[in-house]
Amino acid sequence: MSRWETPERLALRELARDIVAKEVAPHVDEWERAGELPRSLHKTFAAAGLLGIAFPLEVGGQGGDAVDAAIVTEELLLGGASGGTVASLFTHGIACPHIAFAGTPDLVDRYVRPTLAGDLIGALGVTEPGGGSDVAGLTTTARREGDGYVVNGAKTYITSGIRADFVTTAVRTGGPGHAGISLLVIDKGLAGFAVSQPLDKMGWRASDTAELSFTDVRVPASQLVGAEGDGFLLIMRQFQTERLSLATQAWALAQRALDLTVQWVRDRETFGRPLASRQVVRHKIAEMARQVWVARTTTRAAYDAWLDTGDAVTEVSMAKNTACAVADHVVDEAVQLFGGLGYMRESEVERCYRDSRILRIGGGTDEIMNEVIAKRIGL
Image 1 (cartoon, one colour):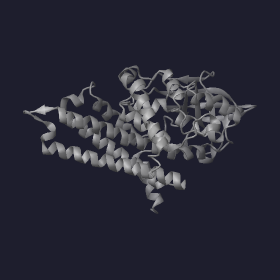
Image 2 (image 1 turned 180 degrees about the vertical axis):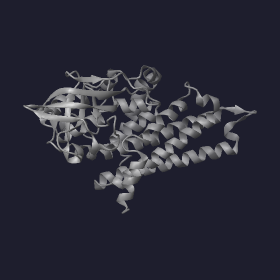
Image 3 (image 1 turned 30 degrees about the vertical axis):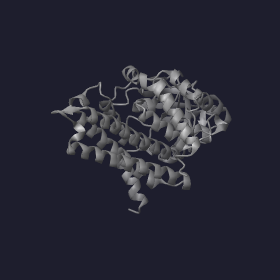
Image 4 (image 1 turned 90 degrees about the vertical axis):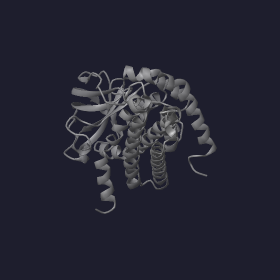
């Protein structure tokens, strides 16, 4: 039996689908206009056992794995949630794993458990104004002073940066390169910690995004995750999970756009006939469906390889690029087949079109993924 279709996971899918239909889909347009999610949604998903589903029981999660998290993500997007809803609701998936894996029991108790219970919101601060994918080159510094650190620098494009109660922050505690990077958990509200107004984005509108600045912010040494110099490896360890999540979002977003388009071409009549009666339209739909199948199959194969071997860097990189390319193609074709309506904000495929574009950038760009693949195959 496929690990995706066990009785427990079929039940999980049904539960997630029901929660999405009742608690998410009716409100997505409102959240897109507001530019953020209500904090109560985190509590709703936590109460249903869906928020921390991939985290171990011993840190307050539900003890599942990446497949369980993927199923919840799939059902969100297939049920009509926006990409921003997924990014914002599950921001703990990038803010908390490092703490859960390498943090002290005190850090786990103060940040991971309440976040997975829906009481806190966390963010991850890595990207800086002067660089994106070059994690090893980050310049935000944390200078040891007495029993703490003094942090100076800036972060940008931080998901949930407005609503976050804490930020798991990549800082430079040592010399140049990856060996000098550490992670500090920095609480919102500390003196010298400033948060910008929400950044105005093309897509992911329901996800609040901000720039953060640190001016002589004093952080206790007890907020260090792991040891000094562990930051780069901790960040890299989580990249595979993030890339798989983005591939999942890509294929599920494409499937949603396909489903909407299939219904549209059946219902829409031109010159006295349904659009679906025209061969050129049917062939477009067939190609969209083929590509979605490829994206789903490739993504799930990457999950299987990763869970079976623990080393599927090539497969994950290929899956991300494949699924994201498919999403871009399918949402573009959806807008084309919807015609003028597809260009209107009232159309969901217009939102799919905007939400798709970030997926090829987040978690490692197409170009970074191809460089990873090239190195892995010996070039």
